[in-house]
Image (spheres, rainbow, N blue to C red):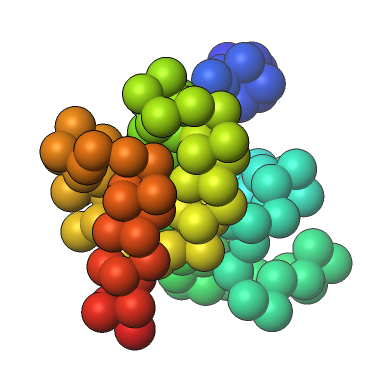
Length: 152
């Protein structure tokens, strides 16, 4: 019951990871019912957050403990990816807001559209400096376009 409550009220994927680690300590995996219980927790998580599912996930297939541990590893990798993306989206939002304040709402909107297509983490690291250093919104956007072209 404690695990169910912790899963229900987990505030982040990180909290879910901690819960799954705790479950591994609490459960006796020699007992088939407890292995199935652990599988149910994994399946529930995958059902409510499809981005975290391992490829080929099938909720109706019984899995061995080794397979579930592999799935947990994939889950943790996928969780890290989602958390990284969330952090990137938050950072992008801050940069768009700053560009809007400095160069106007149109530049902010255009920057947001460009950043959605950029997959260069180094550019995000440099973007704060560009917002300060560029004289105009057009110069900022051209710098983004040039940096993205160089990374492709």
